[in-house]
Length: 495
Image (cartoon, rainbow, N blue to C red):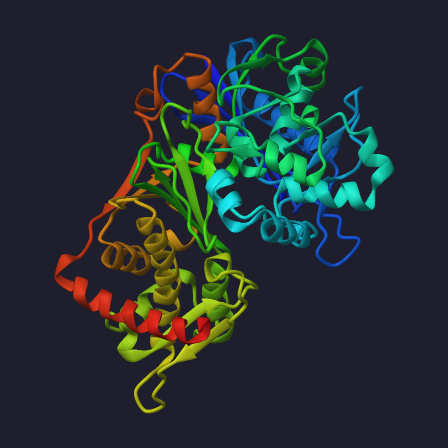
């Protein structure tokens, strides 16, 4: 008995086949092998053709079926993870009307700002828990104003995962979690955000049928089965955006637990058990995968653009030529906590939401030409990245979260012992590292939705935990002092 998980990213589509009994991934594949095309006709635009996602999904599916040699009839459920905040427009015949406007497209920004100012901060934040910002709803506002003839043809709007589910099952539906990331869910009323729909001039009929995140949401049609090489009738039983799904993949379901990633950019995603919001809108709040009106589970996300990209910049421009990342970590470890006074702000990859969309750039402070070396700069860079995570965690704590545990995949910056020790030391949280990814998580989510697993504890009982990093209480003050100095430097730029 197997479970199939898809991860629909903007770079590639990955498929993973998971043995439902052992919980182990038996085959995985992704396409394309080079980054998928992003159409950028104008600066700030980013679009993709949804049928290309389907093409890459087909290639990935056929690759794992060929490698594993299993009978497709033994696949008992399908789960979908997808790039968040995208907009797919379909007509009454379910034809896609234009390329999808994806997450990194910024044309919705002025529409979100106008809505926030005219509706008022209290109205927006108390109901949708965010500024309307640059999300699916405001992307649609751009379409309405700039492509009015096309807008009139829209029957339903879909998120990328909704589109894939429609192609698999011929059923048009979405989830509360999906609507919350689109800024179209009202947490105060527990219903569609009618006030924002009315303000933006959208008919409520454009919202698809709402289904639970974990449930049988449809069955693979004969047409889709023939196209992909699957068996007809497999249930699609789970879908979620990539960040909530990443948290699920790491078994993060309960208040106070955090999932973190640290690639080119970094994310700290924590679960809150009460409805709350940041008055400065520095973090995003969405319905987590297990949120219901009766049981509040909100995902609070702090996204930092300048994380691993700073570390790679250090490797190219500062560290000794030819050095590897592990050797760089060893070099940084020669320097004591706090980098003997060197402080680096990592925000050199554009505007940062945690800084209220300010673009302050990266900067280096406290260098003494007689004392400091490349090792100090390399360590200060990693510490600066960690401190940006802690800055986001403090915002979460102000919203009522008690952060005690951080789950992360054993990848990217979390491969660095110095990075992990610093994060545990400054946050006081235990870090648990796991071997998993989004497509494997989506497969296990499907197992929960189809009733193969009783709950997340059963679904993730076999999750491969690689390492546990406990906070170094002996050096806690040293970490706190270094963070305090870093925060002082940051606040000079924010005032």
